[in-house]
Every structure is written in C-alpha cells, then in structure tokens.
Length: 478
Image 1: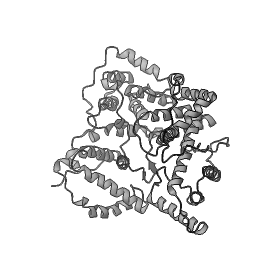
Image 2: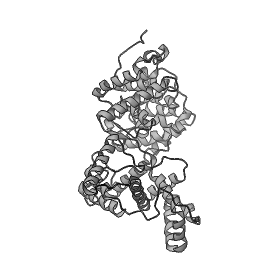
Image 3: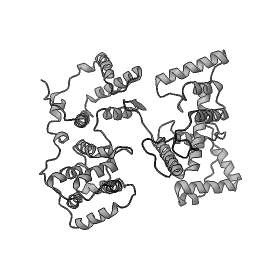
Image 4: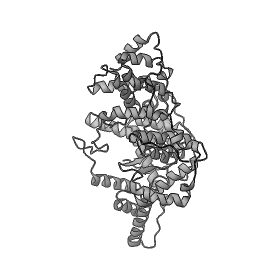
C-alpha cells in the first residue's frame, strides 16, 4: 500500500520534510541504508566529477543503488514519509490560537532593558534572548525600524543564531520562517519560535511579544548546536551527513563545501583579523580573504608571487626537487600532513607528475615520500608558531586546543603538540640558558592564556625521546 502523497509548497518545505523524516529513521535498522546511499552518491560524484545536487548524477546513482540492492528495501508503513510526517508542524506551523506563555510580573522592565541592550554591538552569549538582542542590533544598524512591528523579531533571532556572514538581508524573512518550521518537534527553541511565528497574526506589538517570550524558561538557556544549523534547503542534509561520515569535502553546484575543524576555523578568523587590520573593515562577499598585502584596496594575492614564496619555503625546508616540481605543475597541490590528498584524482595527478620528473631528471631514483611529508609537517608547524606569535587570539585558540584531549591527527594543533613533545628537551635547555627568551615566552603566555599563565613559572621538562615523525630542527619561517 502506498503512502499518502501531496505536493510541497517550495524547496524549504521539502528540505524540512526530508530532515524530519531522517530524524525518524536515525537509530532504526534502516539508518544503515541511508548511510550507504550517501556513500554511493559521494562515490559517484568523485568518479564523474559532478556536484551531488546535479540531476545527471542522480541518473548515474540509480544504477549504483540497484547494484547495492538499496532499491529493493522496504519500509514499514509507519515510516513512510506521508504517514510519518502527517500532522507535523513543518507545513502547518503553530496553531494561531494556541495559548501563549504568561509574561512574568517584571516583564515591562525586562523588555525595556532588552531594548536598551540592542544598542550594544557585542556578540551574543549563546542564549536565545541575547541572540535576539544582537539580531535586533544588527537590523537596527542596517536602518530597519525594529520597534515598528513584530515581523522583525524572528528574522533577528535567525540572523544572530543561524545566518551566514554574507547572507543577503532581503532573504532573512523567508529563511527565518523556514528554519523555525524545520526545528525538531522536541526542540526547546520551538516555544520561542512559535510565539514569534504567530505574533504578527495575533496583532501583538513588539513589547507584548517580548513579554510573552520572557515567560519561556528556555529563552535564557544556551541554544543547542543542532538548532543553530540550517537544514531548510534541498541538499544541505546530504552535506551534513557526509561530514558526519568523515568525508572532508562535498562538491555542490554552488561551491565545494569543506569541513573545517577548530584549528582551521581559528586560522580563518585570524585571516579575517588581518584583513580588518589592513583595510579597517570586515571583508565583504566580493572581497578576497587572502589578499595582496601591498595593495591599498582588497586585491587577490598574486598567484605568481604566492608560488614564488611557497617554493622558497619548500626549498628552505629541504623538500626534494621532485616534490617542488609537482607543486609547480599541478596547480599548487601538496599532500596533507598524513600524506593523503583530498581526492583520488589529486593523488593520481600528483603521482603522475612525480613519476615524470624522476623519469626525466633522476632515472632510477626513488622519492622518500614519508621523509618529505615530515618536512612538510615541519613547515606547517613553523607557520602555526609564527601565526601564534603574530596574533594573540590565534595563539590563545591553539593553547586551548593543546590543552584538550583527543583531536584528529594532522590538524595544526596536533602537529604542534607532536613537535613540542619531540623537542621538549631542546626547548627546555634553551629556556634554562637564555632569560631573554624566558621573558618573551612569558609575554606570549600572557597574550595566549592571561596573567595567570604568564605568572606561572615555566616548567622545564627533561630530555624527551624524539618523535619518529617530527624533527627538532627549527621549522622554516614564512
């Protein structure tokens, strides 16, 4: 028996339905089939170099699904989308006449204090209430009269919690509604967004709507990470699942989406700060984040200059000529710290160019890729240390990461941790021998960890066994 069917109003509603349906399947015996489907799509995307949301790819995937037997699996009627999602809030939204939470006795004073705080342009603290404050500040700074009506309240919350930095302001209204309707049924944020969704229909003024919001305990609680994610457009859920399964990147029609770890995010934030220091403003959507440092206005960095600088750095680190040749003749490819590449195509291109160089210039020679990878790791560690010295906020982020347990191998902080452990004895000897260096180390500690870290006497470790994968020679500077 088939499931009841109906047409979706738009892409937002379809994406919300897909996300809600996947939530129901997660944890069931059928979830393995979903993961297999994602893997087949990504494998086909890599094989044919097609975006995951390209219609042509879906035709190619059909054969893979048939070969894997995924097209023969049956779901119980209760899990078919039409049945499982019937009556869900994602399409109908909250009832316009549902009871509203009672405002607290001191609501009027708290509402006035909230409005006063919207003049403060500081990031929110992670709670819905403070996110609403920041969003109202941002809209007000854009010239919008935020006290004119309640229709701006939901977009304000969305802008502060979910929206991307370069998202167009004109789209925030409909995207905010789509996001609110796509929240999980059990989300603590649903009572908040339900008040904001129905406030315009009820004819509430902003102060009255805010008063009812203050009667919701969850308003003052930190918003869950899952509620701050955008799921309300076709294709976004596949990208999230791909990252969950460990894939580092996904090719879509709009862009190549890359999963960023905390170290990469810290490095990107540091680059944004460099842009602000250079040009006196945050980068816009059309500005190059990696800019020419000698230009008076934001200009992309010269590719020729970048290649020259990188080659000089590779040569200073003793990277073999075959690797340098491969870097120059593959459009700037270099292996990851573990020696792998982002895709099989990149790996094949790299191997072919290395083989060509050896065949022409070093017949019979072999390239010790493990040794070259260790040298490359030293370069990355040197760049991390230089960035930490130049940017206290980045140094603080690295210090925090060094203090955490676990973490993925090959990240900037993992390479730095390995380098420091391998060189502990040598570094300790330097600290014992030079008080000037001790003082400089104290200043960096103050910048990265606060006064307490700077006042703590440096622990000078004894000799350590060298790491088999790291060298204690000073990493080359940028």
